[in-house]
Image 1: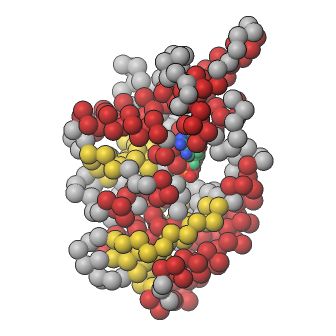
Image 2 (image 1 turned 60 degrees about the horizontal axis):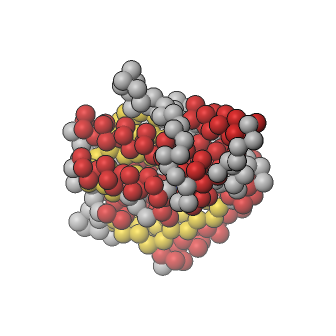
Image 3 (image 1 turned 90 degrees about the vertical axis):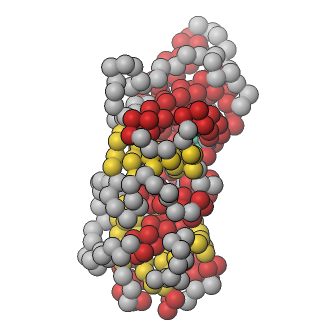
Length: 344
Ligand code: KG4
Ligand code: ZN
């Protein structure tokens, strides 16, 4: 299988991603192309992703993005050895476009099809940057759609979900608080930027599900979002000026504190010393710095892929497909469904 080329398709949300990778004899996977067509600008005026708009954008972008990825990778259809696609979880209509396209390519090219889990793909993408996993790892996946703490023994096997958000995803909390502060969508990068001018200790916002009575690895961010809203309302009512940088920095500190504290505790409890952070929120500068500090003092090796690989893309799907191919996992049947609620 050395030299095998895998094409990966991702359409679970608002990014049409197509990646191409090549498997090496030593188990490394090389990235050949990572093309993303995003419809994020079309959703910005609605303040969130609109499923119908996303599906239509995927349909229009699919074939051109596949063509572009293959041109960048310098591969022809006859070079492709497998097609991988995100089968779920995600938006139903959006997933359907990717799954239908992947089936069409796999059929036309007469190669195996792998329907994969989006969260597992977010974990697998790290191997493109840092090489094969040396052993069991934890993965903290934080994006607009999910916040999960996963335990990964083997990329080709099932992934164990230790915890997840019980309400808003971490990125969703960033986006909602940004909106409250009058910052554009998606708000995460704006909070990150504005917070650099603020004091993270200015306001003591609540840390959800972290008390001694909360032994789980689950997260909750909706109480924090409400606390920020109440704080801003109270300040306005009482005629106090609202320092957007202080609110942003204090909110960000609360999110990052909870994410890193729970993750490091889980790593200790499970005896795992590798941590991968992925998803759009992995780009957050405070999350990166606090995770670095806390992992260093806990003896955990931190692996954070570069931002372009952390957000949704096709390379992550291709990377997981390559690992499945290398592990000789049976391909999916050509009638696999798009599964919006697919579990890890
Ligand atoms: O993974 P992603 O591109 O798409 C999905 O949601 O699946 O993640 C997007 C999310 C948005 O909520 C965005 O606000 C957040 O990631 N994000 C950030 C930062 N950059 C992106 N959140 C905090 N700080 C950032 N620097
Ligand atoms: Zn994602």
